[in-house]
Length: 265
Image 1 (cartoon, rainbow, N blue to C red):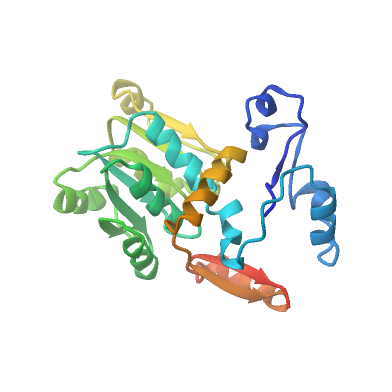
Image 2 (cartoon, rainbow, N blue to C red):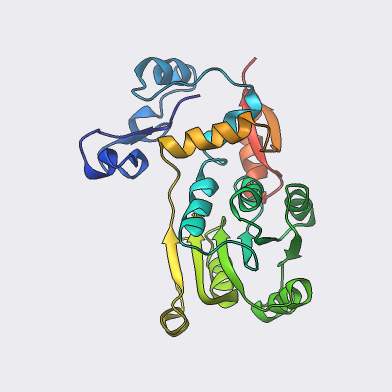
């Protein structure tokens, strides 16, 4: 497995160990590294300045991206003191990232109640399988509707933390509406183009907003350690290279539950 973040090694972010935030580096598969499919793997392995980990089974492939990104986002909520016994954390958007995020909420949450939000019952089933205490199908529901369900499930209409794995205007608006006093929103999803949050509730309630991008080398090592200990479940759909375009269309429709992994013959 290759660490996908190639920093320039000279900036403050690289020196702090956050190569994924380097503005002078590269992200594998984007820009100059996005070469033709016949040479991508060879070019990546032979030119990568990043560590190459021992070979792992193919179902671990999503850990460098879908499994890594929500892990860093959940650590931000933990380190900000928003998790723990008596607190509630919502995973908003159960997909490739959210399925892992639910597991990290249980592993890092120190007893926090974990609630999964999604627009599909199939994806909510994944959330429950991965350890969510409760789930809510938010399709077609207002913020008040969702708060009523939260009240029924947890005894509270607000939550202490939200990890948003969608990043759409609708999901972020819902997160802002259900966040309680001193609550925190950690965003890893990037479906939308901008964030609009209500100013007075955030200021008067001392709520926090964290952007969280991918993960660094140490984050990846921690994720791989958890996987090596058998603490992470995977929902992987193997895909042949010839079927990539059809799979991308299915992803766009939301038909894929979990992560699709290209398997080369």
